[in-house]
Length: 210
Image (cartoon, rainbow, N blue to C red; front, side):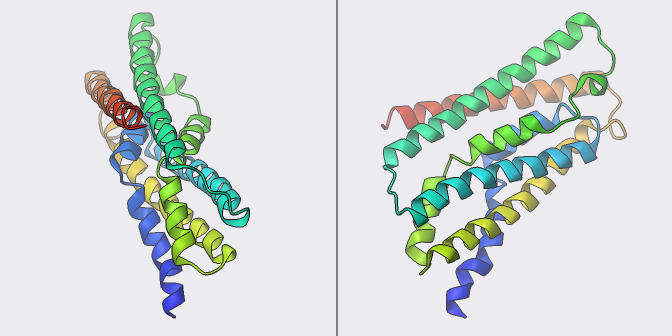
């Protein structure tokens, strides 16, 4: 029973992992494109799938092939996530400005209905912290298959956490909650600036310690 505890705990760890600040900032920027909570929730699911895909891929290589990746490499990965946050925030500001400049129709009509952005952001986010997670798994679990199962359960937990977070962040942008374009613009701008600011912090911290 004791050996099963890490596996049982994996879902809880994955769920709480979804609520880390960089994840929340990224999903808030993505959710600001939507005027439907359901679409925001789907973005969260795709983010979680992308996040799990990356961690699982790295985990299979490290656990089954017993490949050791230097800590410095993961610092570059973290810096890459910071750069992604900067670009995500800047792109959101540009799209909002373009929308206002062209006096387009309601933003929802121009927001893409697919979830490729959310999946892509999840893929990149999976690089951040994946090394620490997998090294922990390798040290605590006895077999490679237990490690892979742990990562899968962790992934399911992270999908659940991001689903909830996306739904919460999608509420202020829902057409049923707020019909004020000014409120939407203000929240989008705030989310984007926080994304850029935190992204700069992540890049600086990781590149200066390499």
